[in-house]
Image (tube, rainbow, N blue to C red; front, side, top):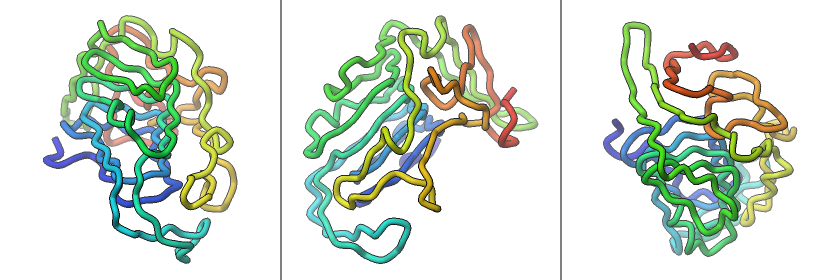
Length: 225
């Protein structure tokens, strides 16, 4: 129920990582940047992009606030891996991105659109997961309905620093703050992901039928119930 948007990434040159989030507002994301990675998220709202921004804004040396240079925002150089899109989610604005875009393992439910940059998207256009959010005395619960298990169409690939590569403008790799490589090996609630076939979206192996998951507050490291 955010009046604006769940997340606004403005004039960033990357690398930055957005993973394991639940974005349910009418506008999920404004991506007025490049060099980002969106991984294992649930997007129910619109995704807006912006390109050819003439503002000269800084990018930095790796793991530092030292300015390495200034650059415009041409648009693109984004990565979308293993996300789930429902209701109003739409990646087609990236069809006209100036810089290369990488996409894979994304699932598109009824009413959502993939991008031409994804060679083999998982299309569930005839299925509505019927998302609902309910507030109870002990927190917020997300309910969805899945006729078939997420990831059952084909195996997904684990997302790592090696797969994400480097942001094109800054030349920096997607790494942890200490410079070690990243592996998206746990889900929203800290549950380990299947390294051979991680489930698309923020919840690892949620099952089928009517599924209810506590999304706030959570004890990280324990499976949501």
